[in-house]
Image 1: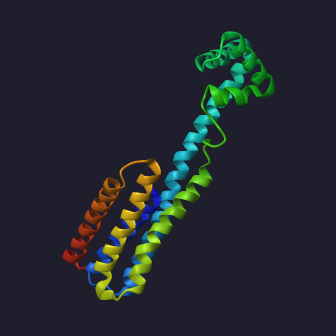
Image 2: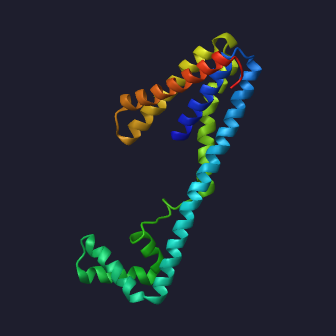
Image 3: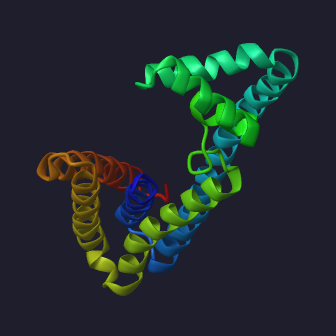
Length: 211
């Protein structure tokens, strides 16, 4: 949802700002497409770098755990036992579970139960980058398609209005998924989206040039 919201706000604001400068439809669309591509690549690059750093940290932790398992196996076994005792098992049962898991996959047991790593939550830089680029592009496409279809004289009003509707829907859906207030989330995202579009429209109108 976050990537789509960013795509809507940034592209709609760009389109509205350029349209407010009394530009032609082609100029508006070129600016919008350029904003979509630049934004998608920026989101992808930022997400890739961020998640890659997380992946590097996870790898370093796993390498350290491998060394400790090789040099201090008994201490590592006791660590697992303490973890399972903390989860409600008695000492004997916790030790038996720790021994069996260590025998099956020692590194996997420590990665999961000591470090909190799992296959589901493990860092995947390329997947994260692609997801960010796709969601941003999907959001950015909404105001861009609107600008391409409506009369040029109504681009500012219709792109702004429809973008705010899109933002409200996405905000409400995100809040519903998270169990939060849908009205509050919808208001929050539409409020800041409206501010962004209003500011770029003012800039475009004042300077009368493509922004």
